[in-house]
Length: 258
Image (cartoon, rainbow, N blue to C red; front, side):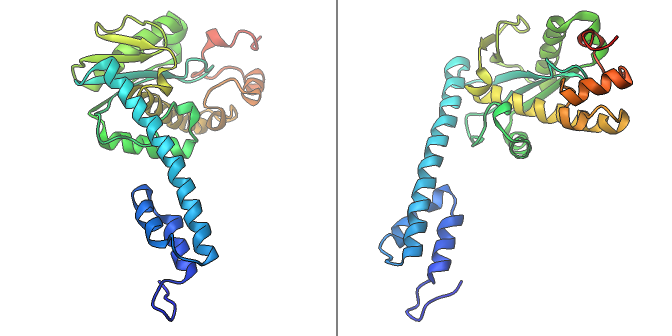
């Protein structure tokens, strides 16, 4: 980095340090540059302090998700469970089951619906690194048609818990009681309130999205890479024009297929 004739960093380089500092570095850099009279540096100090405050609030949100996980599930192995694809008209129903330790925390974790696709991918990688166990289960469209969504959902949740490969001390499920495990507890909007359930929602969403993107080349014309099997206007129009593919849920498509 460049230095002035007095041996200190240029204003541009000092500002760059503040801009790129991570959460743990900000306080030290603010202390270092708070007395620097250059306007560019002071603007960077103020921006870093605002960023620190936003990050502090975000970390408090995530810490509350882990605290509720501990409150509901205790200190043993706690598996969070969530589904994705329940309302789609094509593709599988997918359930994730994830056991997260209390530390290290997955900062940024949230209900998958609140995250961008890129952020979900990043968090899914981090979850894979720190999780005690991860289970995934899929129910194909023909099985959903055969047994109905309620039964399919219970099947998938039970299988995902088994697939995790650990004996849980508690199973925390997003939504209403499912009766799929003797140690289950359910929580409405749990995917935004409990860390392990949020992790399950992210893992399930990323996994199913990859499947649907793959199907796009197998069954072209249905816009599966974009809609992920949900009933977008373009997807429904394609079904009307092309008919049902082998991955469509016939029982979900009666309103727009002759």
